Image 1 (cartoon, rainbow, N blue to C red):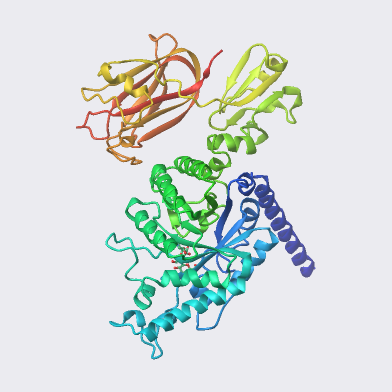
Image 2: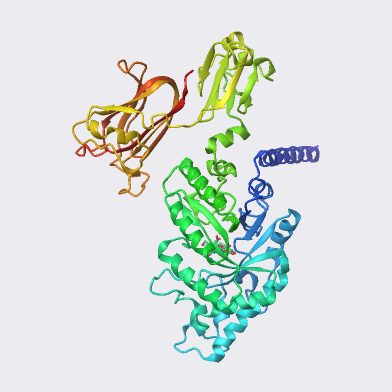
Length: 591
Ligand code: G3I
């Protein structure tokens, strides 16, 4: 009996695991595929750990990797300390998993990295007596040649083993110093043992071992004005010297607050002008105090730029699959969260011409109909629907969960004719009432145009500059500093259905440098609406704000006039100076 019970418990557990993993699998395969989306632009890849002891293994992230990526880089298992821990003793076991996974899933493999001052066993730099050659006051030619021989043997042993399945290599990683006084890192054991020409020797050896392999130089902060110029001059010298180099690896360890798109674009042009291919080799964008939505916008801008340069960018690799496995710890820099769910950043790059929540809505559904127990009756993507086509009972619906920027409009008659009733997210949805009076409905994305832009304005103070709050220019501001309250009214010229409003405050200005939070940002303020410019209602109230960008959804309201009404211009009661760079409202014409 006991044995029977144990067997049945095990079978239940096994079933549970299969169901949950298959659900996860199903979820994975329901998502749009980035490798499919970007297939005409560049390879899109990820760094992976291949060891079984790491949570971030090829296998625990396997479903996402198969669905999203077509290029793999070993995060650590193809570095010198993993591949040749002792002289002449190569360890290819862990990378073997990666190579097999790549071959089984039709993926390419980037080799990272052959020669680096990091993660390199110190035997490379010890002379026959065990002394560190790189620490000697004088390095003899014999010592120098010993280290060169070891470097070349490592390159030969590794590249011969992998052959063409590793189609490109970061031959040398991070050789340029952050110290503006030099080009090469003077603290590198390679420079101290061999000299600055170790790089040219490495590239020449790599090309000799495998002339088919594409050879890259890889570095961090490679777009930063303080460093990119020196990288370029090193690369120019290599090219002029006939060194076989094919590409520049820009690591891309960035954050929501920098580097700027223009900085990245200037660097792309500089490397492209050398005639080099560009790989983005280790992309991750740390939150740095920003929101996941701001991170999404950042990823969107970055991938828009990468697509613009897909004539020189041939590979983009994320430095990890999900935030549970990022080397950047709690900065949460990747596309998938700690539960392996897609973040707004993932949705943002699915289609960089649309906001992330529109892409998500088109795939996962824009509206969830819920019953009065909060259970999901049905989820629908944007589109046009006849009530009698639903596979759930509308009369049971008591609430709607609508993705940001979307609107549900029910129509009295079929074919979206007759009287109309508009909804966004609400807990008070009377499905029975609508089932009686409506025959069709639409779910649509409300085109996010800023309808306040360049409309006529009236302010209670500094009327002469009030138009700057709606001029679309993030450098000019309306900045009253008299005595609050301050308000500015915008005439939208016709009635609109509003579903979002945005205020860009002091922190978004050129002087503040785009900081996410500041006590100099408006603290207490509200959005007021009016049909006639005389009778006003409060539509949304903000208190205790410190954010530089206030971006809020609205429960659908109609208005011809909108007013930003500020009662506390900063969090510092002595400072009455309000700075508004932009006041924006989003919606659609009511007709
Ligand atoms: O292998 C040991 C394991 O045996 C031990 O149990 C474990 C816990 O101590 O440590 C493991 O080694 C760690 C290794 O990652 C594997 O997880 C090292 O301590 C740790 O320092 C190493 O960090 C890696 C780092 O390079 C080392 O410099 C990161 O995972 C990796 O993401 C990072 O990647 C570098 C690129 O190669 C070059 N560009 C910068 C990028 C970020 O630093």
